[in-house]
Length: 211
Image (cartoon, rainbow, N blue to C red; front, side, top):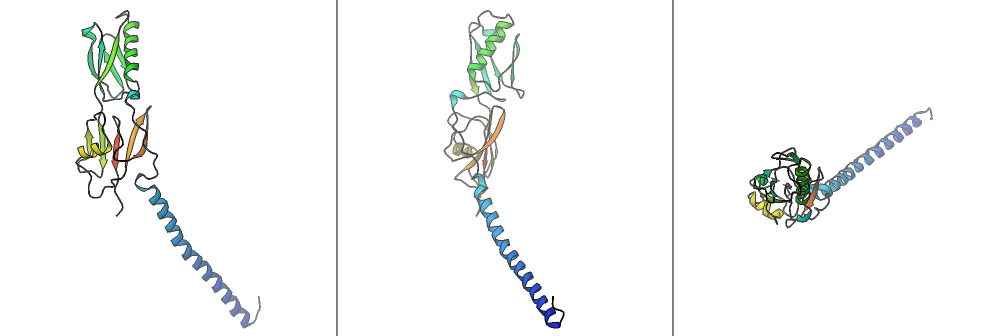
């Protein structure tokens, strides 16, 4: 560094120039970061980043808590009974005791009931069938006029569920919703169009649109 007056002025100018450059870069970086953050948020906002809802297949439907089933033991009226699957996922058979129903198809439950009746020595060769009397409820939340729980009906779509819940509010995003579905004991959230078929126990989340 020069030790005369000119040197001191030159040093001050260099420091001022470097500070001004850093400040300019900082000011430039701020809106760039905001633009990136806004883009990232808009890309994943309102369910856009969720995976698509897989189709609901009635032949692979697995029972869950809240479903009401009728267990028919052929030739045994006293053992033919209607059960509501409890929170623990069980039904309680007379004489035979509790049998797990949640997570099983109706055919699998029928085989489990027959096996229990046989192993307990109640019947030698029981013939059992299971039919669903009432499905567990679905839930509609978010930007609808009457959020809450509603009875499921086969063939129900997202739009049908929203209609039961009083329709969309004026703030609702109507092009897609979020659907939380429980499968194999695990819950996962998906995105779904209005015509997507729902499954018993689904939770529909209607998003708020950005004005």
